[in-house]
Image (cartoon, rainbow, N blue to C red; front, side):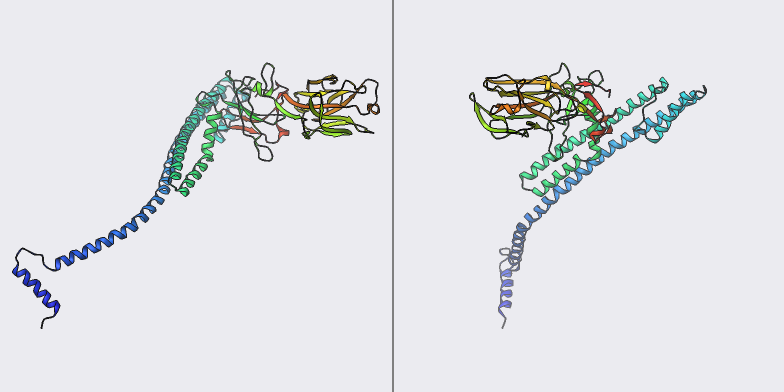
Length: 476
């Protein structure tokens, strides 16, 4: 007897035989069913796999594109630098050949003083063309003219190269900044961090820093060229000083803030001055002053003012205003107030102003007022503050008188009277202000024709004086 499978097969063949062109063989639906099931399984598998693949490609793409972007940037920078080196090489060779021709022509005269500077210039070009020493005053005019032409041509090549690198860096910075924002928006934080790190690396690239210094300091694009970096005494603010419209350093020279830092790493601040005269307090210019001390004595703060053998009473009210009451202590020997390191010494000569608001009771017979002293000697400006019976604001302007930096405050006695006779008499100090108006400034850096520093003096003791008490004393 046939089995069930055999009967089914026979039935299928019987059906096919009996029914022509009206039905599909039995095996065909089964195959389609199996194929359909496989496709569905593959579809669901792909639905799970595709997001994973997409995430992999998404993670890999930023890194790959960032690497390509950096590679393209480096290649373009290298091309610009190679062109600069080629041009500088040709310029050096041309100048060297001209010098050798000049030396041959000069040797026939047999004058060593004329030939020697040319010989030294040839040696300098061969050794270090980027750092040529100054020509001696006795050098021939033809040599001086050739040197000037060479330096002008060299500067033009360097400026072109710096402009190219600066432009590439600016475009790269803009591209990276935009990419950082886009990656952050879609939540790809690690990739955004990588982009930022690349931006930071580019900011510190030596070649790009040198290019930006040249563009900033070398007089590119119509900008004046930097001549000096100066530090003024007092607040130690530093500025870049540029050549004026006549190509000289003068009180009209434009200046620019330098972000200097103090010993604890904090920035010292900015100046509001726009030209050198305003920065150092030159005559005829509105100075940007340095406020060395300012204290309103309406509480218990004295701002570094220390009193010796003086009785101090805070928040003392007199004539509808508060101040600090000052009187001699019993058995006082040398009563004074001391505020250190706020005045300019002779070694950094300057002009300063002391402004004081005070009150002397009209009933005082012995204690007549107060006076300020620059470290030692007589009262600043030769003045004693002795107006009685009302609050008075007085100021004294003076120049450095010795090498100390201390401001001293003394209580004054009426003529012929003794300290022991003062008893309970007092004066009241309302507020005190000390401001520097004219400055000494020191050279910290000098810049050459390309804008590169030609010398830097970090130690303040070695920095030469360029301005004293608001007046130029040295040529750049």
